[in-house]
Length: 147
Image 1 (tube, rainbow, N blue to C red):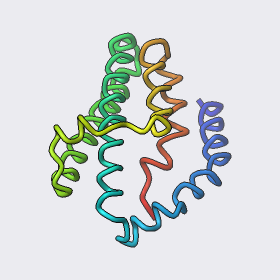
Image 2 (image 1 turned 90 degrees about the horizontal axis):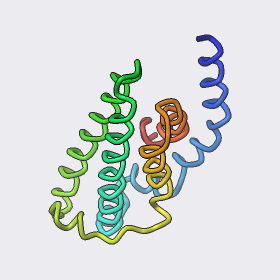
Image 3 (image 1 turned 60 degrees about the horizontal axis):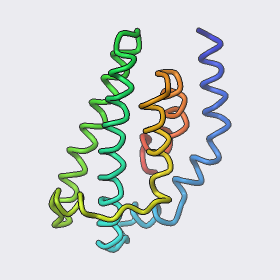
Image 4 (image 1 turned 30 degrees about the vertical axis):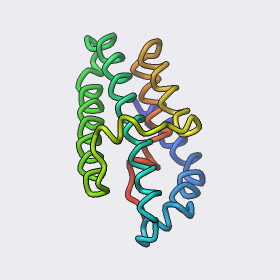
């Protein structure tokens, strides 16, 4: 177990400069300062809707294949977290005067979906360990506090 913890800590340390770069991005800075125009927030909501709903399907697929493993509680928690993220996004979109129908018809930007495409691949072919590794890379920036 110590070896796994050491690997995780090393990955987190190696990713720290990238995480800081992401959190210091001008978009995030403008968001924190309340300076993003509503159109930009609407674009974010539309992209996130497609990403989150894709991730829900991918994680559910992986759970259906690996639900008998000891990782089942973790996979269920990840799935529930994505469901909570969707609920929060729908509330956010409502404040932007966007319905779920608006979100569904929002045109995805292909470059914004590279990660969820990888997650979809993991959902079909990957393991619970590979999903954990992907989240280790992704969650520090997306799951952490915004400055």
